[in-house]
Length: 247
Image (cartoon, rainbow, N blue to C red; front, side, top):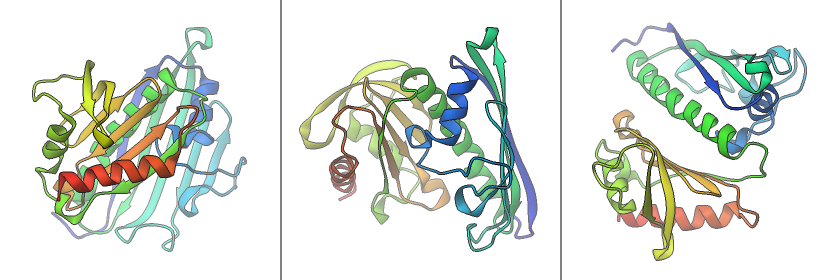
């Protein structure tokens, strides 16, 4: 571990069954469907999320946002940049995306890089799930953290047991999940590793973040695409469920 400021770069490339137009919409105006709601001023030099300045705004091709505003960045960063390049594939029916997250961490570099690196894979996987199954649908978004008792490396395993996930359930498995209020969800286990669990139903994505490795509590994000979705009700139900897991 080092406390010296150091640059970092996390780069990923992927293809997805979505048009460049759909990818652009997801990155700029549909962010609540896969990450969290964000707003971009649609022009180069415009304002982006978390005090960023948009340094590249080329619809359906490139989006770059850069921030060096200490009031908008977390205390462990002095620079943050997100860069997205989009190219059409298969005559425009598919898209190739290159994503680069870069910047400067000022302390605990190894831990912050490890967390950002692992979260990147989960976030981009969720983006692909959104583009493949829910692109363009209105969403009710809820995000919250669990109790302090969930801030330990074993917490996500407890969440998996509470959901009723078999230990050997692999990604892509269809299963029945124990949900709030004694209800059962028919879901696909679309992501699973020691740090994250992703569940997808016909009308929602449920994301579970086991951040105990980095000293933080379990987090839950709900992307609810049902016609009658209510973000406040989703948060109340799942927050109560999570509190019960760690009571």
